[in-house]
Image (cartoon, rainbow, N blue to C red; front, side, top):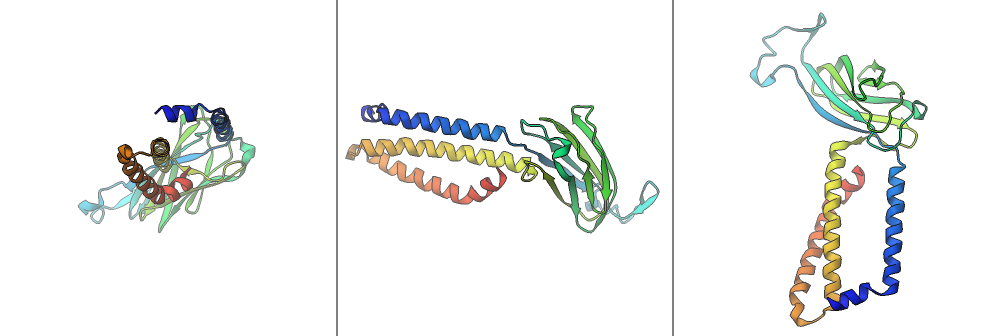
Amino acid sequence: MNQISHFLGQPWWQGVSVILAVVGLILAAIQLRKKKLGYIIQFSESVFAEDLGLTEQLSISYKGEAVKALRVASVKIKNYGFLPIKSDDFHEGLEIRLNGNLRILDCEIKPLNPRNLKINHSINNQSIIIHPTLLNSKDTFLLKVIYDGEEADIEPSCRIVGVSRIKNLESLKQATKHLTVLVVFATIFLYTFLNWIFLPTTDNYGYQVFIVFILLVFMTYSLIYKDRILSDL
């Protein structure tokens, strides 16, 4: 341990630490300056329990229009970044597309934060178009779609200046957890590696076995989740 303390106390290592800290602050500042828009699909389900076989025995209509399989979907949209997204930033309206053999019957938008958030929309075939509007940081609204047909594959998309794509917040949450695990593994690996390098004696054979084990776990975890993490962040 004294050898490790002596190594970490070297002037050149302190310089490396400062450089790493500065790089970390720069990366954090870059992230803070990014516009971010996300969504959560809360549910997409039939109004009636299909497994009970009731739909074949009922005559269903919505606002006087006959339907075969009445369904409802709920999607939450949120500006989860620190920068506002202005109406001028929209190259096109935010599109919530419902893929599948279906037709949209109605749509309702409920502002969640703030309560006076004004959202205008239109229905275009199998898509809900959210018209350009100001979305400040943490602004959130809920979109409920009533449709007739098979279960929809919901696909949000956008063309907004500074926003590469609208991200699934549930997937982003999972990716953040995986990244945290990778950082913990990397820290443990670095610590055990330093012990292995600076304490290369037979008395520390356990360290050598442990570092190989950690390395294998770290590599396996990285190979499994690297694509998912990079795509969701």
